[in-house]
Amino acid sequence: MIGNRVTILLGLVMAGMMLWFVTGFLAVMNTMNATVSSLGEDIRTASTTLFAMRQDTARIVEHIAAMQQNITMLDRNLNRVNHNIAGIQHTMSEDIEQIRTLLETMSHDIGVMNLTAQRMSAYMGRMTYDMDHTVSPLEGYLGLP
Image (cartoon, rainbow, N blue to C red):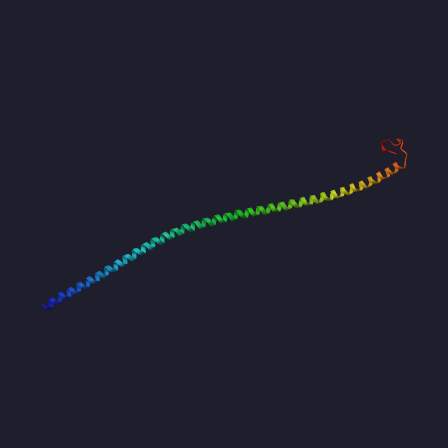
């Protein structure tokens, strides 16, 4: 009878240990399930974040492409402006040369006019002198002597 009691007691101890082991195993499994569930949520969050980052990267690439196009257009416009400035400088150089030639011609013409005025003044001086020292047939008419 003592052997039966020991066997029953041993069976109860074994059953208790098995129950403790199963309870611990189930607790570990619940913790593992919660950890895997949390890990799944983290993976979903990371996936959403990566998708948003991919969209942001695509937008950044689009902005960079637009900036490159704008820089190319700006470069073309600056080249066109430089070409126009060079044309204006060339035209102004030609205009300045024409003005210089015109001023030289005007200076020459003014010199000729000055010489002509001097000659005319000398001629008029001689005429007036001659008229003052001669007797006019009109004898005083029209202001002549």
